[in-house]
Image 1 (cartoon, rainbow, N blue to C red):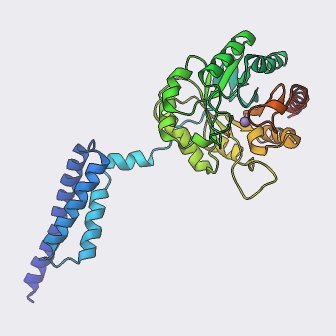
Image 2 (cartoon, rainbow, N blue to C red):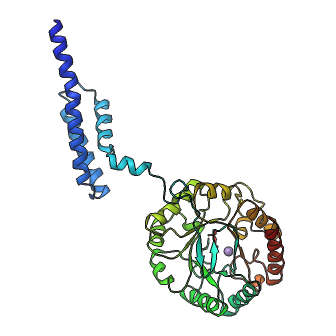
Image 3 (cartoon, rainbow, N blue to C red):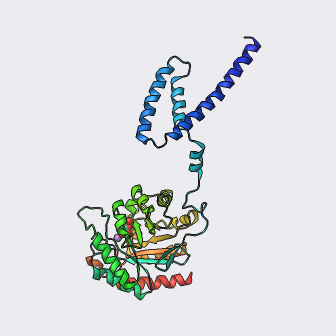
Length: 353
Ligand code: PEP
Ligand code: MN
């Protein structure tokens, strides 16, 4: 081959790359304009397009699987905007906002470094039951009352909660004893209803990856208490909080409630190390639920102390005036005398650290 011919071929070879780059940019720009096309429609048309490209390539010299891989990559290529979005720090992260988020619940500030306490029954059963716990909270100068009105039970034959009637009971007791109410909501369409009754919407462990519920909670301006999923990793937990924040609601309290492991000595394994990790990685308050993590009244106090010692912004535990007849979690709720002792020892510990 003559030298001039080789130079000419090399030049043409190089030129094709510049033409390809121009075409790829045109392709990306058209794709950007079609970004509202439903995912199913897009993947269907890409599948047909790939089949046609494959048929046309029969006449060419490009290897079939190479061609297939190139065009699949081209179809998934990200624009500059998409690349920047995937690299942006999450809204819940310390990298995005260094200052601690503090949530004001009827004057009780959660996330300041001074721990807050959330107590109340597993399920709301009656006004008298809730009022007995509310009175005990008020006597202690505590502010945050919990209680489940919509109960996510493992068995459909177990008590499912009083629903809206339960929310009404909580609100009545909270108004009478000047408390803020935390209660779990399990479906997106009940979120709006709950706004009139609760001060904090709880999203439970079973729903911590119910993304539609997380998004709906994110569209409200109510504080959200988000539990860690049953087997959720810390990064999944943070991503779940991001679902809420990405819709506009940054008032989120994270709650470590134990994860499922091979260990059977406790109901779940309390991952105490999650607390400092979550405090480090996010700017959100972090609480520890010692009832659902341990499932054991005999070790709740040391675990609550451990939570405070590692920097938790709060502790949650279940209290029932008569746990023996409780309609859920009968074995692990404290009665009022046990609660008095638990709280006085925990408060004494808090004062020391
Ligand atoms: C609860 O707090 O009432 C509850 C059901 O907890 P979890 O979602 O952590 O199991
Ligand atoms: Mn419970």
